[in-house]
Length: 331
Image (cartoon, rainbow, N blue to C red; front, side):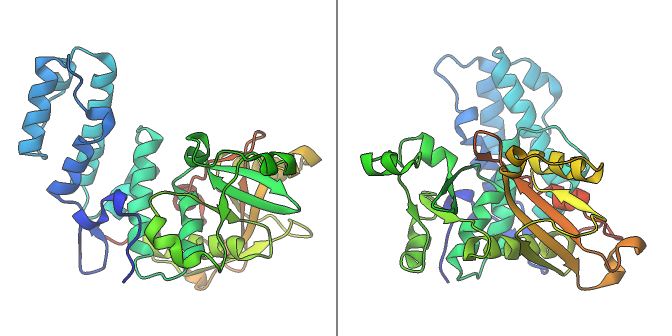
């Protein structure tokens, strides 16, 4: 089996009989090694004591006073967030169940925590995938993208990779109007994905009718199946024409705003239309999983970028926004 996304720590987790992820001591200790919790040279005694305690016993019942005694305000906030996440993981039998409870309960955590859980859940859901396009499309779920249009193609590149200078613009690329110079995933280089998957250095062509958009739809279907145990079909669309918008889910904040406007009968101007990255039709294979009025209707999924070309997908909206009858996730 080809491995990928080693940095997410999936190899530190156990699995239950249903294939869901079970948290381990080692996985929690991985969070203790994150840069946000690295002790600076001038860390106070309270913070040093807390870190030492949790390294010895990652499930130690931390009292609020142990964190409040930390001198530095940012450090206190980071530790509060970590313990909130840890306690959520401890309260559920699987990471999938904990993630679902977090997003449905609107627990306040930094987006990076949800992104990290999303990645490791997708790593599990896509464990035996041999489709590099699906794996690259899955990166949209947990890593912001920088979008650009060139020669009619819509190209998504990892925002952090671009901003870090890994995709420095060459004179030729600048002449062509592209903001970055980055290799686009294709059949010719797909076999290299696994060895470079943690570098996030391949761009994806999301143009409607091409493989990237279809792959994203397939990953959305896999995400819904893995977390809700509901079979769906997700198909890319080129536009919302002559459809009854019976239900919609925005796959990001901008997509939600566009869906809200359409729902309320507003006209969408050309500038706003230009921010739409992808549209999908989602249908349910089993009508019993859906609320009555949506039994034979499609749900429309809207994915859009910001005006400056950044895409921040919110896959949790699929867990909170679909018109499903049974909202319990498998544990």
